[in-house]
Length: 160
Image 1 (cartoon, helix red, strand yellow):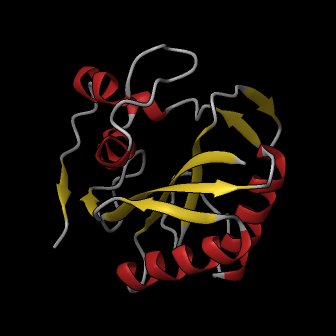
Image 2: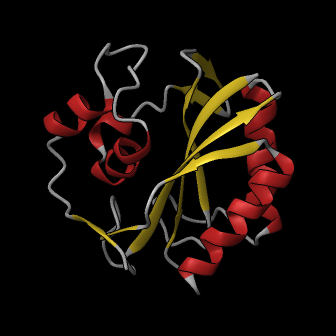
């Protein structure tokens, strides 16, 4: 059984409903959700002239390997109506694999651990809530340490 940490995000439509639907589909198609962070709101990263994002980290247990998991995730995004038209553009749903066990991979569709997670407060904050002591397999630092060192200036606020 494999353990993966995912980050879900949405900044179009009913963001809370989109994240809820993504959780349902992930639980059905990818593996059992073991832990769920609070919802966090942050301004868009990379392309700032768009609505704020809601993000949530998930811990899942899955029988899938990393390549199988990313294929299912991409299918889930497509099922929910995601289209990839603009880099860093607005999206109904975005699902990233942040960590998969302690594996490192460089595939065309997937890099593990996520190559930018240590630079993005919106990924680290929710992940630190559910997995503060997990060690990044390349940087050899805990998620809490990475969050403390993160220089990303965007504010990440718990969403109520």
